[in-house]
Image (cartoon, rainbow, N blue to C red; front, side, top):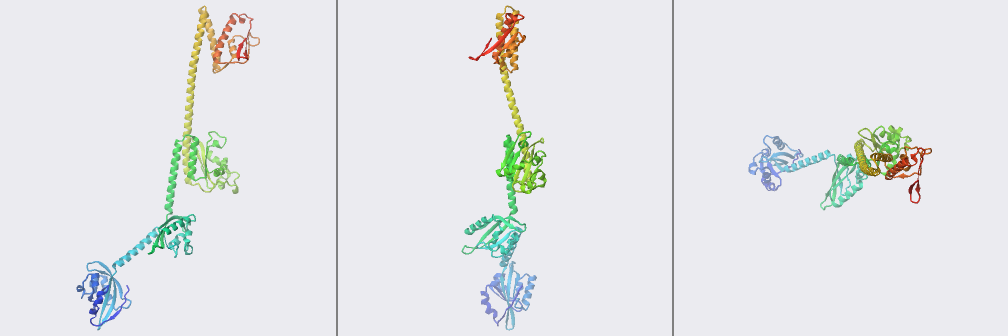
Length: 593
């Protein structure tokens, strides 16, 4: 509380003389005598405190403006009673309106002297709303500072061009830029070089449109020594003519939000690809298309430049089906194939069923012994990051391996390994299912061929039986006509049937294909020695006979043999028979001698 005093020297009739001045004054004024009793009370005092002049005159000021018995009343009485120095003429007190409302009064005191009497002029001003506004402003500023601190925001101000013209403490704390570095437009250098062109474009558009500015980019964060994503917002401060007089803005750290959004997008992308490849693997029964889908999806998810699915048979001499699929950039594939041709490295996948993940395969001491010729770091393969996952069936058979590479080191994470492992497990089940399906299809096709063959055999059998029965019937009819007795019929008929049976046997041995004429003749004369020194001499070039011709000729030969036995060369002990044939060159016919 500060108080100062001024003394006024007046003579008798001072109150009456001052009355016009009191009524014209903008402040509430009370004139007090030496005892502190009110001797004059202007209209403004009536309006401020609610007491009319007639009620106020003759009463103490303390009784009119402060609660009875309160500490403020005692304080006011001491203030009025003391001899005041020039520094003690002003004060603020908590007052009460006549209707009970609380007020804050600013008091100014002036000492009155005249004719030996002393008094006070008390000037009173209601500053209640002013103090409330000041308190509200203080609270607002406190709240703003608290919110800024809680939000880890950077607060900045700039001139109309966007240049920093005074040190920005929160900017320096975030970016580590001292005032010499961030003054003017130096603050732009704290942003990532790739983001600066977009930042400048946004600023220019906001300046031209005199509109709020917003930019999301990467700002250097000194405490963590990294670029972090931030959201910077600026609002133009316009003068009375609408021109930009300055800028005020904030920078909010949104790095974790951005990372969460990117992680969500990546997870959504991963799930979409896994769903797509899962659907493809379940529905695909073509092994080539199946392993291609698995390889493409796994390469996309693990971030590889090249990917391959290889079965052991595809790598060289090995049992099983040779399956392979390639995915990725041609240059990366060319760089990766030398690794896939190293048995020691690939053997971990095929023989030992081991998952291999290396940040830099050419410099990884765990696999140095398996990379012959690459012990010298200068000879390290262009493909550095390496990931290989075996594809193992439910029975434990290694169906192949998924191999991935990248020319940058340390690309494949544990998450990538788990994702590829999941795809490998799905691919193994799908390959098993596809193989079972293909085996079932082969079995179905085989059964269809067998059934078709059986149908053909039955049809052929029916045809041959019908033909044979027709031949037998014809033989029986002819034999019956030429026989003089039942015994003669029986003898001739059985002989002819036996001949027919031998011809059938000969044809059956040859699967009813063409048979050799010489064999047919030898069969007809089987009871008699043939060749040199024999009773029957057979001579002729090789001739193949169709089944029908062979059956007919066998019966003809039977009749010739029978006639030779009865009436010809074979009817006497020393008789000899010569059977010969030749091919008529002119007509292509067989001629017997």
